[in-house]
Length: 542
Image (cartoon, rainbow, N blue to C red; front, top):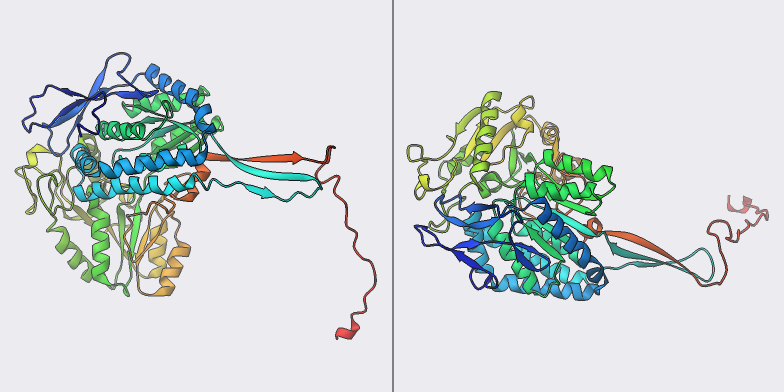
C-alpha cells in the first residue's frame, strides 16, 4: 500500500516475524494528517495472525472530533455551492482511483479483518460501483417545476443538503458501507465526519487518502479514529450540541436505538441500518441442491458476520431430511483458513477477538435454550480442529461452523441474532406456518424463499415483513443500485444505495416565485369555477 498512502505515510520499526509493514496512521482533519490531541493510540491487529500488527492509530479525543466537525462546517458553504456535476466528477475520480489500486486494497482489507480475498474483491468493487453510479447522479439531482393555481406565478422544488453528517460504520464491510453513506452525502452537497471502525483503521485511512487524491476539497470528508464509546459517542453527543445535522449508523440494534433517541429529541435526521435474524424458507417444490448452496453461503460466508447472514433456516417437513443430509455434507467439509495463504477457503478468521468473544456468548444462549447441536465446537485450536481447517489455528481467531436443530419459536435463539458462523434450523408444517415463522422474529432486514411454485413466491414476497427478499436466492447480496435496509428492529426505514438514498441526505426546498407584482393568496384568490346548473334530460339514454 506504500504508493497509495505515500503522502505523509510513516512506517514504524517492527519485529513483525512476517516482515509486513506497520503504519503510523493519522486522523485526516481539514485535509491535514493529525495525531490525537493527547497522544494516545491503539493498534490494528490481523485477526488471522495475531502477531501481525498493521499499525498504530490515534485514539481520538472529544477535541479531535470537534476539530473535525469545525472543519466540516467551514467547508460546507463552499461544497454546497459547488455545482453538482462537478461534485460528481470528483466522485468519478474516486472510483477510478479505487480501480487503479483495487488489488492492493483487497489484500489490505483481507489482512486487516480476515475476510477472504474473493469477498474483499467484491466489496471493493461495490465501492467502485457506488462511485460510478453517483458520478452521474450529479447531473440528475432533479427538482421539479410545478404548475401554480394562480396566474403569473411559478413554483419550483430543489434538493438541498442537510449539513454536516456524522458517519459511523461497522468493520464487517469497511469499504462498501462507508462509500454507501458518504458518496450520496457529498453528491448532495453535505460534508462528513467519518469515525472509522476500530478494527479496520488502516483500510479507512487508505480509502480517505484516495478520496482526497481525487480532488476533494479539504474539510469535506474528515476521518477520525477511535472506539465507538469514544470518538463515535462524541459524534453522537455533537447532535445534542447542535453541531451535527445528520447521523448515519450501521451496527447493533441496541446502539441504533440510543442514537435514534438522541436524533429524535433534536429533530435531526438519522439513517439506522441495524441487525437481522434473516429467515430462509425451503419449500417442497424447490430445487434442493440450489437451496442448499444458498443456505450454506448465507449461513457461513464471511464467517456469518453479515447483517444479512442466514439466521433461521425454515424447512418444510416434507423435504427436511433430504435437505439436511445434503446441507450437512457441505458443512462438515467446510474449508476454513487465511485466504492470503490458503486457497479455496469458504471463510477466514473472525473480525477480531471481540467478535469472537461475543459469538461464543451467543452460542451459550443457543445451548441454554435447549436447541440440539449437530455440528460445531466453538473456537478452533490445535486440540480442536475440523478436518478441513488449513494453517495454524493458534495464529488467529477462527471458529467452527455450527448447526443447531429442533429450534422452536419459543426459544430466545429463534429471535436473537448470533453474529458468527451458526445456523438455527426450524421445521415448518406448511407454507402458512413457514411464513408465520419467517415474520416472527423482531427483525426485518433480509429474507429468502426457495420454491418453484409461483403462487408461493408471490405470497411470500407480499406477506414477508422485511426490507429485502430473495426468491430462489440467498439472504445475502445486494447490488449497488438497489435500496438496502430493513424494517422492525433492523432499521428506521431509511435506505442505503441507489437513487432512494438521496432522500436520506437532502431535503426538499419549495420556492414560490411571484411574477405578477402583487400579493396573490393561494386557496383564497383562486377564481371559482361555477357548475353549469342546466337541466339535462337523461331519459333518452334508457
